[in-house]
Length: 181
Image (cartoon, rainbow, N blue to C red):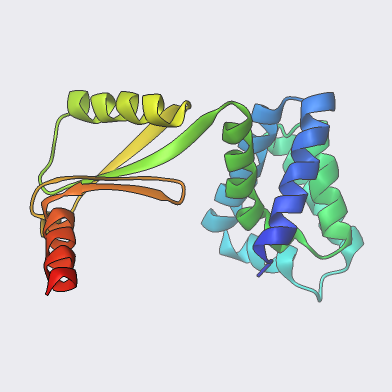
């Protein structure tokens, strides 16, 4: 497993080159296509990620796969370089980090909205618009249901949590009562 700092450096460097010489969105799609392929074909993953397989054979396999998948030259070059260094196993971890970098550059953030009961898409969109006003960014919202929050909404945008749940309000009241005793 690669640490987050190294993945961030790879993603930043790849994004900078993609922005200058290629299509950053296509590169993200290429990384995700490779990740899906590896997830669906465990035998292929075992071969490509095995240190017992010579790097030259991995590079040849990657070039053949890249042609079949229609990968960009930049993606093919990246994966070939990773194959030469026995580092192809980082691509599934790199893909989401790169995607986040792409979204960040486009001023888009992901948010998770938790409600106690299922709510309609129009309400989720309204919450997303409000979060966009608060953050100054375009917000992509994923929703989930957690009955334990009793009511209200919890929105998580990056590391920031906006807790408007009944459960959260009760916890804050409880804390104030304990502090005042």
